[in-house]
Image 1 (cartoon, one colour):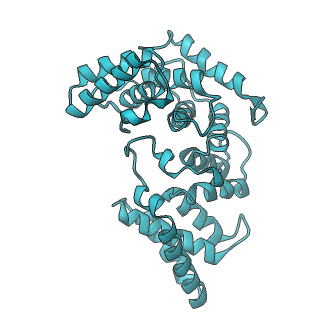
Image 2: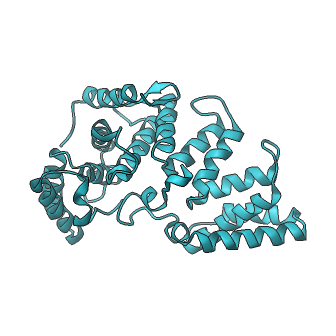
Length: 302
């Protein structure tokens, strides 16, 4: 039986399902999958409902999209359940409703939380764990879902470890760095940031670069630190992200580095960017055809 921080996975899944039931039972950002992705499940009726919902969504017909997606979700299609969760979480064509989003994500986890990380639905399941973990981290106002940072840390650990989800790895790194939900451990934070940084996560690259260049909480490595800060800065500019914090960290590290450190860090950054074009091109994307972690998740880096 797999465990997460000594908590058996079925027990964690049961807790999530119980939370949804306690809130009144299951309720009926990213793009929807194409018909070629339909191998993840279901019967033909569910697949056709998903197709109809997707076509209506792209056409801007929210009512028709909801009809199709809800029908597919009721038949157990994981992509439909995930997309409905995302829509309610973001208020995308519907009234924003975090509780309803939580219920859809929890239902997806209950049905597929133990599925193989190589399965077609794995990106949706992994992101559902991240979404539910975030709800436990902050709680949902005026609901029975209160903040539970310990549970959030367990959920992120599972998504980060089993599914190799980059976003979960960033969240987990933050929690270890800040001592949220457990003991503070900068060394463990750096490990999680490294895994996510390799997948193109800009925040992970920034935090790891800061830890390595500061060297007051983990073993310093000025070359690696400046390299990750350089990668983060170039990626942030590429996706037109506010880079003020990254630029300040990069300038501070660059100003104290010797010429040899600067030269090596710049060369390593250029090499990483050249060798990781896919991660570079999708850095910061939220809606690229599937959950963003899918494009950057590799079994080698889990």
